[in-house]
Length: 225
Image 1 (spheres, rainbow, N blue to C red):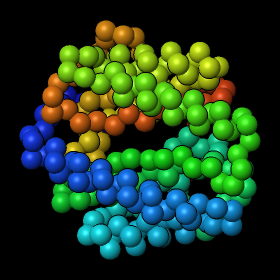
Image 2 (image 1 turned 120 degrees about the vertical axis):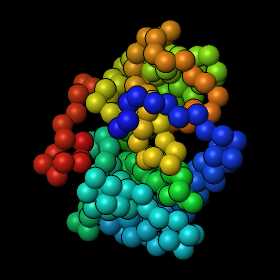
Image 3 (image 1 turned 120 degrees about the horizontal axis):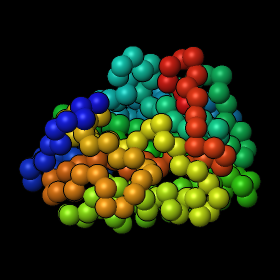
Image 4 (image 1 turned 180 degrees about the horizontal axis):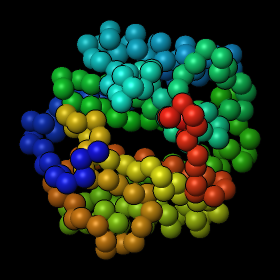
């Protein structure tokens, strides 16, 4: 990730980002009815790839630093970057995060959503609800003149008050023509620290919240965390 220069996008470029983000959101809406017991994560991947191509875009994750599939499917204890496969069959009570990034006219629309498969346990439901609220609180801090640390602090304060921990190994990031670039957006931190936010910055906020410790382990495939 380029951690030096934070590019400020023009109005035209921001419109391109909105177009890419809109297609990413529509892709998740398209996949949602498929998220049910008996479906494999590979089926979700293949449909995402087909739909993305049909809409004139490319799946940016495919081949990115060697990533083998078009989307990330992270089930239950997997925090992020799960690799879709034919042997992973969704079952009632699972939670799955689907992370998509269509590349539209040179710009990346990077977003994800966590879905319940069937009926979630109260424990799983609370985890997802707390994480959603963390996202809302992080976004609320985004305004010109605020600092990057304000975003992480808002997320960390709420998550820890609810008895959860914030993953520190992965962050939000700048995104535009480049998939991952400056600035890094930690989901923890102190208010009043970090770079100031300026008009034209574009970045992701993607809080990852754990029931236990914030630490994670990357599996031997080099991706699944």
